[in-house]
Image 1 (cartoon, rainbow, N blue to C red):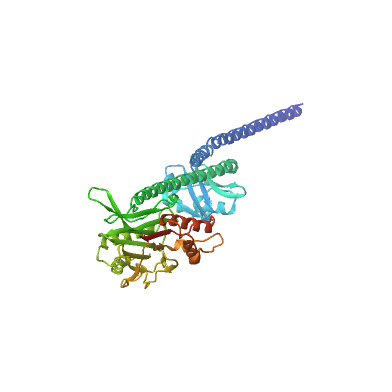
Image 2 (tube, helix red, strand yellow):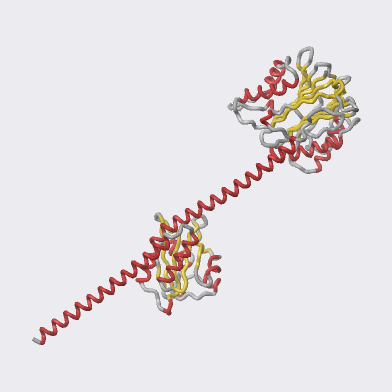
Length: 484
């Protein structure tokens, strides 16, 4: 009887102990589930990477009862690990440290993709004091687990020094793995969002810079268009630096005297028409014309070796030198020799071809100098087109001791002198065929019956028809002088 009672009592106690153990286990599982649920809530409460990392670290340190925690992210481009965020009093110092893959405990976990529990950090062969020495922080024990995303380790989650001097347990390690597993998706999304934000900011910066540049170019265009020679007066006009391409760039000036009362007298026996169409907003082709005294017309057309803003600046320097040194009594050859010496001092890698001359509008005598520019043509009133033969010299800015020669020709009434840049003859169609000199001569011959002002616009139209929509690759300049 006693034996039976003892057996029943033993079974009752065992059953109670089993129930109590099971109750405690279920309680522990419930607490673990609630802890993970808390982590999940924190993770899903923000998409911003730094906020997410801070929440994960705070929650991990609290749940694991650790003195400090950190998450170390993998930089796949440099094969390094870096501390995006670290909690604790030395968190900022920790963020400055970078580890190589395989270096230290975290590097080993990232390289091998396996978690570790270390009870004595200093005694572990994988231990690196690189971080500890930097922040003067003693590490007793630690847990370190990999953070996976799409099969790859994107980071390492670690907690350091369990509070109360206790060691971490295997159960703690499993709990930290459970925390790391769902964080991966949120962290991956946050990193993608962060990259998207950086791209947006970069785009905004680029757009702002582009808009600022466009605004500055528009201002430059307005300023430069104000220098366009409108008509020939007995004063030096400003240089033609730029003209809006959509205006087709036609500009004409009939040389006319200005009476003392401001009225116009009989026009001078010459007419000038010109156009400039840059390949970009501003360009390196240029022309200018102005009167020297009563009867002499100075003109120039040039082409800088580069394009865009650098070419425009170099061209502005050339025009400034020309306007500062050209006066009545100075020959075109003397002018180019002096300008060339000044340009060579600038030690620029650019150069410019140029053709300039002085026309006596009464006699038709033309003195000109050729600095390696395209050969001009004279459309004769009596028929035929003649090249304006000249002794060609080097472009401006190539050699400092170049002496530029003077050449002479006579224009008869009705003769038209056509100057142009290689943007005309080297214009290309979609198949890279060039417009060429032959087409230019044929076009000029076909326009013989048109007025000079019309010819300039018609020539550009002819080049555009040949290009047939192909992008303009070089600046275009044309200057036409007709002897009346």
